[in-house]
Image (cartoon, helix red, strand yellow):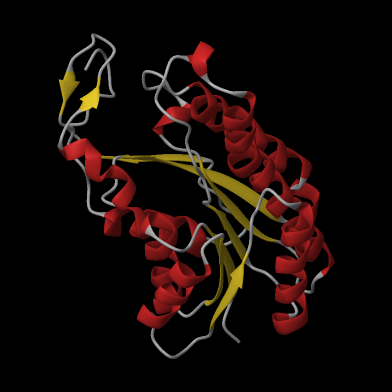
Amino acid sequence: MSKIAVVTGAGSGIGRAVALGLQAEGYSVVIAGRRPDELRTTASIACNAPEMEVVPTDVGQPDQVGALFNRVKTKFGRLDLLFNNAGIGAPPIPMEDLTYEQWSAVLAVNLTGSFLCAQEAIRIMKAQEPRGGRIINNGSISAHTPRPYSAPYTATKHAITGLTKAISLDQRAHDIVCGQIDIGNAVSPLTERMTKGMPQPNGQIVPEPRLDVRHVVDAVLYMAKLPLEANVQFMTVMASKMPFVGRG
């Protein structure tokens, strides 16, 4: 039997690339996201087998997350891997100008969504035979260092690090492992603007290098294919010349 994976935010970018990479490695992949048409596009790119199941889901909504994992349990009977990838940002404006709604929307998807998906995945992984499984959280470079005017996104990604550690600690006894991949400037529609210039802490607008998303896929696959006795707790994959390390 093929292994079963859930990938959130699979309608584009990193999520789409990882979902396709997992399927190419023999996983049956359940893809989730808020845009049904984009999810169907991902599925249309995929090869015919193993299966790719499309489940439109807003990960910030508990009932929709419950329905997603009920579909997994009903159709496949088990879950081997969750890639918590769905994420959004807020407008790059001063923190004091952000609305409560903008702040709450980012928390709902990036943090609450990751928690809800992990919670449902753990319930399946604890009960299945053989028990256990792997959760990989997409942390982002912002889990370490903020960009200017990114308080909601940065706060959630710092929180993902705490969530990753808590899952790893609390699920040891159940053979469930959790790691985090922090990605810097992977090529995707969301990072296209980086080639034109991004605000830097000194006020300059500077174009930033990007890395091919296939390197991110390779990194996730390496983490995913480890036996449950081994875990990559934290991994950073980034464009080597991006202004992140040191003072730029």
